[in-house]
Length: 240
Ligand code: DX5
Image 1 (cartoon, protein in one colour):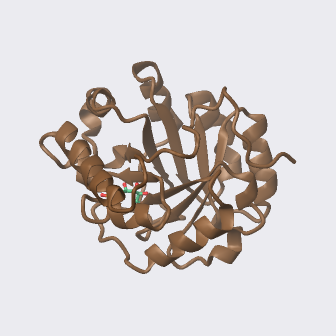
Image 2 (image 1 turned 120 degrees about the vertical axis):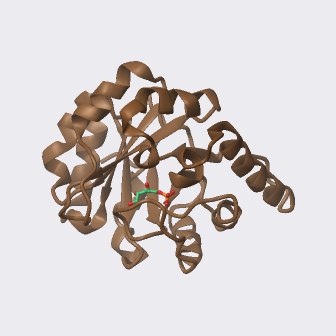
Image 3 (image 1 turned 30 degrees about the horizontal axis):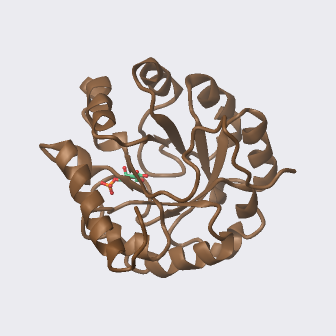
C-alpha cells in the first residue's frame, strides 16, 4: 500500500501552503454556480461539499448530482466530505461526479486502509476525518496513508456553530502524528478570530462556511481571513 505521496496529477494543493476553503453548505443553493464563481474569483483554490445523510449526522444536505452539476462550472479542487454512515457505497458516484479529494469519517469505517487504497486507485486524494469526541489514536494507522486529515472543530451536521476551543490541542497532536507532508484541515466555526489560532496549532486547510457566504462581500471576507492569518504568522515569521 502506498503511503501519502504527492504526484503532479493530484488536484489537492501540496502541503506547505495555507488554503481557505469555502463550504457551499452556507451558500445560496438557488444560485450555487454564481456563488462558487464569486469565491473562485477571490482566488481560493478549493471548495468543500458537505455530504450529509441524516443518519451519521442529524441533517441531510445533497449528493453526487449536485457535485456533478457544479463540475462543468468550476476549475476549483472539489473537496468532498462524506458525513455518511456507509461511505464505501458511494465512492464511485462521487468520483464520477468530479470529486478531486474525498474525506470519510473514521467513525464510519472499520477497514479505513482499504478505503484509502480504493480512493487512490480511483485517482483521487484521500482524507480521514475525526469528530470532536474521537481520539487521535483512532487514526494512527491510517493517517500516514492520507493526503489530508480533517479535525472537526464543531460537531458535524450544521453550519454557524461555535468553534470548540479544546480542538486547538488536538490539531497540535495530529500535526505531531503526521509531520509536515500531510495537510491538516479544520472545519466548523472558522472565522477571522479562530483562523490564526488553528494555523498556529498546525492546521493549513481552513474550511469556512458562514464566515464567507453569510458576508455581503465574500471577496473581502476571504481577504480579511487571509490578512488575519498573515499578520499572526508574521509574528511567528512563517510565510503564507
Ligand atoms: C458542518 C460542516 C461544515 C460547515 C462549516 O458539519 O462540515 O463544513 O459547513 O460551517 P461554518 O464555517 O459556518 O461553521
